[in-house]
Length: 205
Image (spheres, rainbow, N blue to C red):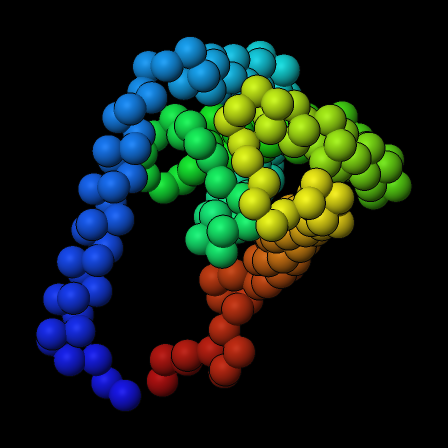
């Protein structure tokens, strides 16, 4: 059934009410100690990332980090929309939720693992260890501090997800790198100028 203009207006009004409610909730605890904690985590994570990252591979690592950010943000927003978990205190009142973790801490750790563990085997082992720590150390710590609340979610549910994020991001970068190398190779091997002309050369009569 096609939505009518009244349905669109009604949906927009409901969405606006939710936005206002989110702003009102956020305004009650903004600049609270826990809010400052999230801000400190975000800034510290960004500074550590910039300090430790290999600048000679900056483009490659930024691409990996960007892919990781997109996946983490999408999954986190999906989980919150499905009421699997909630963030009592958020750094900003709108999407993305708990951006200090999604945009800094998790991508920072993932990218450093990507940088220091070159082979697929070592990367997989390091990523699995990090996944275990994320599920059974970091998440319970966030719950204890009061910046994360599990509703119907269980910590161990996230173990394969954390691991899959790492493998997918590395695989995506490897695939893009392979495509780029093939294109560059084809461009170098392709004849140019007169050599590229496949027809009969032009002759004056």
